[in-house]
Length: 80
Image 1 (cartoon, one colour):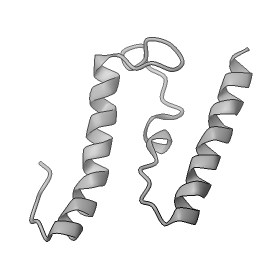
Image 2 (image 1 turned 135 degrees about the horizontal axis):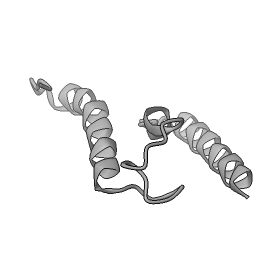
Image 3 (image 1 turned 90 degrees about the vertical axis):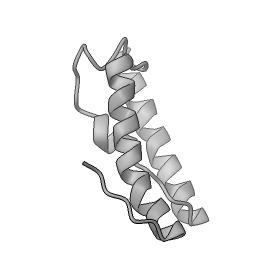
Image 4 (image 1 turned 135 degrees about the vertical axis):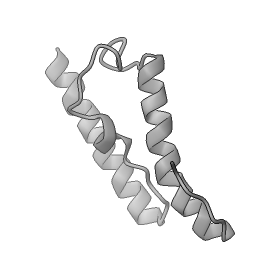
């Protein structure tokens, strides 16, 4: 059932956050950017993104990575 899949996904996300915290690893919380947003243009099914969905994920990742990379490499970058 879909409720079991959602619960398992939420448990997985909690575990990943704990591991990242414990290891001091940077974490991009993609769930925060796409969870709760159901749009047939974004998802093929409950797990897989469409091309538009993948573009949204890539955009969220880029925006999250840019400040990390800029700080690490003293880059001056802007997002337009």
